[in-house]
Image (cartoon, rainbow, N blue to C red; front, side, top):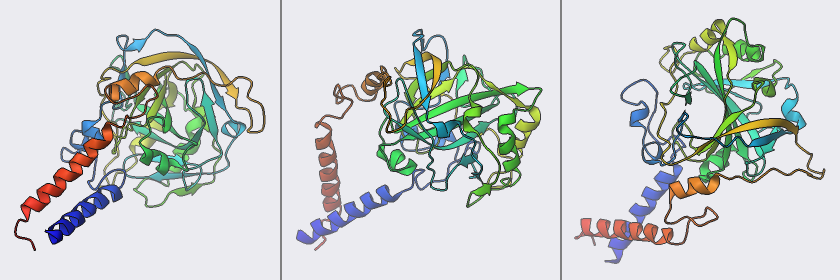
Length: 357
């Protein structure tokens, strides 16, 4: 009997180790357009999650609260960077300032919990001008959407933040692009970088071109805000989404440069967006951003600290109304379930090997 238990315990430990060592995208390949691996086949939280992204913003699900809020950025966020890294990872074009996905760019704001460090930005685009964005407005898609990804500075880095599964781990800014007769000058260094990132890359390319990330923001800063998830596997529900209402311009020639990027099969990388998903009881709040403030330095007194978040408790109740406390933490009632699961697994293995000695 003792040998049975040792063997069963070993099996459980191997199972748990394999699960914990799987990458953020799991052990299975994923894609957008091939039936064998498109978003309908994505597993894990992509399939079982309760507050998934992207979503459609429409008059029925948007709160009429026109609260005026501030977004605050440190000086580095407004400075021109003299170089950056670009990488075609087979799913999108990703741009970052440092190889370890960190930066000196920090922001906070009303309704955001703590400081957020800029990590990377990437794009989603369509094969035609009537699709491409992940979020939609009243069912309407834009041809391209930019995501500026930030992680909360309570974490060591982006990987640590994603692995935490904390619902406030990331703050992502979404920016829509619409067709314009003129080029968007803010995109010029990105378009130049595409030439060296046509094919899938193992390592990011170092681009010696000036880049100002704050130049991507629209001139009107009203935004939609809600809690949701990553839009690619693992689809972890860790994102505080902030999507600007007003689109910014992109010319047809610039958009065509994105469509010329190749995927891992050598085909044009297009339609790399996840379809919208139900809000499932969540609320989208539209905010009027009236200020882009300069964030005080660490040593300066913060005379106007950001206002607290009014939507967090609501989304926590959607996630788990029975076991969520008023502070958004799981109650101890969740722990016994895990114990029962492990006991059941052990018992099943023992029963499966009745003659083991």
